[in-house]
Length: 480
Image (cartoon, rainbow, N blue to C red; front, side, top):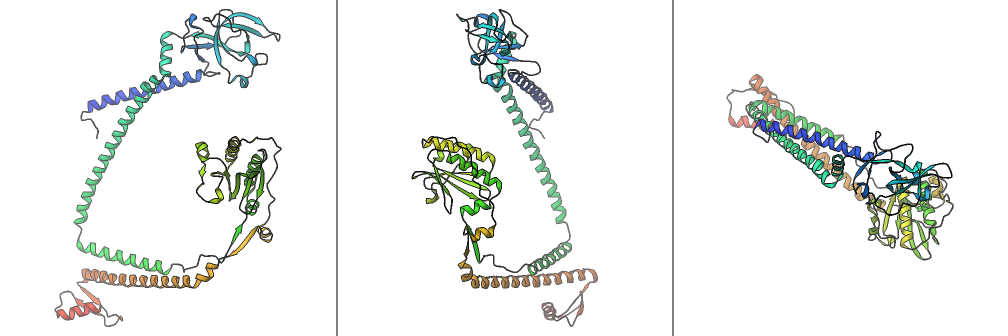
């Protein structure tokens, strides 16, 4: 099914979309090559440059023009060269690391010389400028000779790289193809659902034509099986156990840090060294956490929870960047009073972010960062029993456990009794339905059925066409 009634129109549109897709791919490839060619090393031997100033307009090189850069062994007077403007580095050997942030100029060579180290150097000048550049550029700082591209190719490269070119050549065609494909998918799914409904209607008619006997028999058997399964599940249900504990343990900050793994201890040492590098800051360990102050001014709190280090800082959460995922804890209680920004550290990247936040803390409170030799603040490992004996871990009795134990046990027993009663009732109901189904199948097979009383005795076979009193018949059925 298609949105177009005419197959010819649909085919023509498909060809147009294929052509558009091919053009988009070509333009994308062209833009990729052009962008890579403007880098220092170029791509596949191609290297382009873009004119950024008006200093070469006298040579008909205008702002935005693209030039082809061809590297050569030496250059002569009158050549237009592309070079790094790194005057402070000209006395040293060329290093790509030192000039990566330096601007690239395109000027004409007006004089050639040789420096004290024997390197060939060039005095350059913009053809529209009055004076030369005032310094000689060594050979190894020159990227190559600039050759203007043909006018048509120059304008094409400029348009493709502009905002209008990107919108008209890539974004608009891609949007048109996406809308068309989405609409076709909607139509396809709609047609499939309609076909499924039609097929479902036919199946419903077939099921309606099924005999009433088979339907009743199948339903009775299914109910019987489901009831037995439910009763069996209820019988196998495990007994009720109390989950409360009579006692639990409270760990201090020192105990949590000692029991932490080596990675957490290493991150803790790095963060503590960064905080203590702030001028005048001192640390104090308490039972709950470690605090860092300058005088009476609270600057940070450090805590350990499992494999995470919680760092609370005295900076406003709104002043931090979104990448830190700072949690505002100013409304959580007096523990966080003065340190409203909570940052969680659980990786080496988190340690790096914590160092950046500590620098922001120093700027906020006008603190000086002092270079210090890092120390290892990680405590040695100790066993749980040793920490318990030293008082770093405290055993606490759960008083609510002994007080409410009897009431909770009684509630559990009542709940078990109710569940058992419900399971038994469901089982009896299922057995009754099962007997009805069995009798019905027997009638279909033999034309008569047998029944017995509740104690299993006095079994009788009654033909389906037997003549008997209506009251007697109802009595026997009720007894069955």
